[in-house]
Image (cartoon, rainbow, N blue to C red; front, side, top):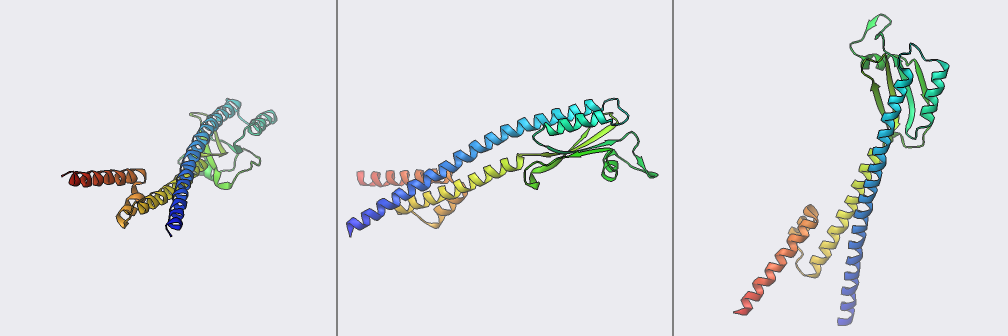
Length: 218
């Protein structure tokens, strides 16, 4: 019986270690993934901003959009990894059909673009967002639909940290059970405070051992 109990106890300790290793693995991988996606998203954001400036350079001091300009704009969009659609509005006069609009944004919302170009980019719809551009006193206004990685970045970190927190809590509960100190209070502390909760648990245990030793010393 002692041999069987010892083997079970050893198996539980091995299981607990693997739970901790997997928890740390998820924490490291999610943190690294978050950092990588953040760097890529920053680079993409910089490129999108440069593309928007280039579009306004093409439109600068132009009254209309010629065929050559359309080719330039299409080439710019096709050369981007993140722009799926552009809509260009001439906002020299924000009046349409006799109606006056209080702002460029209201005009753009109701008007048809003077030029539009769209292409397919593989990505879920929820990754795309509108990137509006009004360049100061420019007579042109540009809407760009672009692919943002910010949503993935947050999702990777959230899932990774959530899995880590759950597994670390399980590991802490198993350890407390092995030391015969498990109760509902410690479970709540582990769930709410995670590593900090386990450090408190260890500190309380050390103090308890010290008090016991001091009693026996008398």
